[in-house]
Length: 501
Image (cartoon, rainbow, N blue to C red; front, side, top):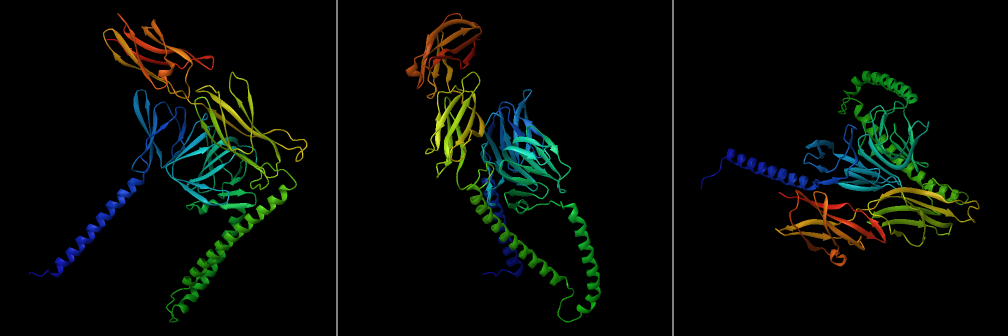
């Protein structure tokens, strides 16, 4: 048998290694693509979306959001009858003033009150309630969801959410649906429960400071003006000492130890100092957090502090909200071991109806508001009142206010068959919104031809019926009319048209 030469063996090994590399790249590509969220999301009309350049895009009907294989999200919509596409970026926020939720798409790093960080990918729903949410989006870019924001000098007042992006000098652009401003001086923004020192990228929670630069790094170059001069002075002193060491370097380079300069030892000292400082910072943060908890326990024994972050004596919290056609389900939590809340309540307001006030049970954690109108916006106020033994002059306190819209009923009406003498239609009612009575009417060129009553029982699961006809016009339309629900007339604006040719 013929032996392989050295060149052939080397070529064989080279081809084998190349094959493994190609396979590795191939499987890595498959794994990367499989992780990309390529779901197409429908975006509600009137929503606000920002791209990477802070350009605000207000969505129209039939707008969709999808992530491409280049990791960027793209928004597609119809403008003047033509499809239009916008590049949004690798992460984006969708906000609608009538929705009690915000929607995050892409990678976000949620910062907890404890300083822990939770990485979020793909789609995330954020409930705009009394609990704030804080996210780092990318280098020097943040999202803050809260019920109010103010600056120390009072020049900034806004609500709901803020997108905050810093330049390397510590100036910040602040944007939401109400504003788009750039600061020229370092500012501290105040929220309902904590503050944000923007220029230093620090979240201030009571006595605790969370250094946000440690999350995925930061290219922020901002320094306090009063520290800059001292830093420059220290740098000049270091340079002066460095020149002296250079002269001595000639002697040290020939000492036979192999150290051609003293920089190696200095680098090791710097690294050691860095880790010592980092460890000291962690210990300081732990001590600060421990002292903060102790202070809150002591302070809350004697006084009521609405803005206290860690309150171990009592608290209330409004959680997620779920909309139905005629109902809204509230999820809430009450911690009251000493029975210090006398009442927990909600009020429900909408245009054209009397305000409803409902008292909630402290032992439960959910309540469904029923008997509401479909496709209608309601303002819900969540509040409480302290016991007179805790606060003799206690008044009802509104802890949170949200706007929620009920769903539109899912009725189905369509033509199913048309013969020379009969027009057949299919009707199905929403199981959550079943009318007591109503009719299906036939129109020809907007002229009423015939009306037949709805079979309510059959309509619950869906049924087919027909109209007899002769000599219809060009536009044939069937409508659902005269609906009655809970004794009240309602209009669902439900119809289907057919062009008779």
